Length: 112
Image (tube, rainbow, N blue to C red):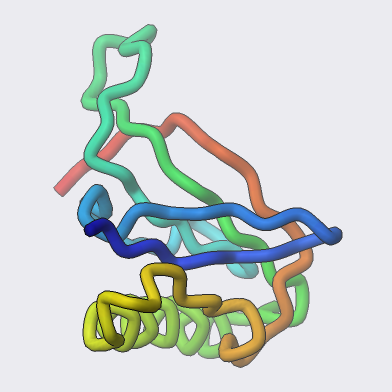
């Protein structure tokens, strides 16, 4: 059975399969955390592009708050993995330190 984290915004739920998560990073700037998926994108630029989810929290307006948001996302992914297999969906939205104000599917370069 697969496990998912759920992120909700604007009365819409987004399910992210945990077994497909490649990494979690903070892009340049603040307020955003990106969950990279183990799925190759279009490769329009020839770079190593992957699909992902960009989670925005406008109240995470400085580096320390964005770092706290990122670290909490990573911690919650671990918590989701530790839950019973009879509960395959783990909602991280109310557990984040900063409220989600946007979520988007993205295709970005992944540089390790």
